[in-house]
Length: 391
Image (cartoon, rainbow, N blue to C red):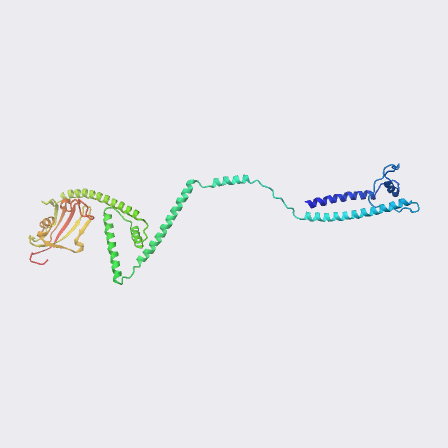
């Protein structure tokens, strides 16, 4: 911009000088010789000639051919000096013209160059306020944040459970391909596992009778984790869970005992009304299903088969499917069974309904037989041998 201003000023000076030169080249024709006008300018103190209008000053060079024969000597010297001055001014004017042309070229170059725009200062405060409002508008509420955190926890738990299921799947795959039982140590380890499994199954059966079901996959997982040394519960949690399970088991026992007492009394009362049912002097009720043939002497060895059950149909013991018998002299049987055998002949059968006081009493025979249970027995005389025969 500074260069442009300098060039414009120089151009203005050139135009002014050019207008002066143009005025000197075309003066008004007033009939006065030019020589006289130059002489007039040199005589500053002399009075102005009486002409119609004053001649303008000439700054541009003028070619004058004086008549030497008529010009005085003093005027010739002044004319020579004036011509020299005009030549100097012409050189200056020429230098100024060169300067003008140079400045014009610079102006053209400046005009061709792309203008540098000054960045405009923008007030971004309204934009910042708007962005702040948008952030507040899209910010999740605290409830959503809590739900998001809860969902993340659930997803993490689900991932852990998935990993656990995969591990159990691998363990199950290993179980489906049992190892070979070659050495004695292999067989002993396997036998210990079988024994443990039988105990667990027996415990589960007892719990099922009480209405308590154990989740088998989690039961197996607890065994596997313990054997691998990586239980997922600490000792305090395990003890607490076992204590809670024991309380639930005791409560189930009490409920079952109460139910069995009521069911036993109801069953006993119903059985007493059936045809062929009698009450023995000991206090139990019986019905002879088959009397048999051939008396049994007091000294005979009697083999019997017994089925023991509860009023709800739960079978405690059944010797018939197992193919077993028990053989004792008649006098050595407990009073209940000695009285029942005494009502039969050889190969006879009888059904007994026995109140708790003649069976297991208030203590019962846990876990299969609860306290105060009414017992049902089906007895069959399998064989009778004389006392002199081997049993």
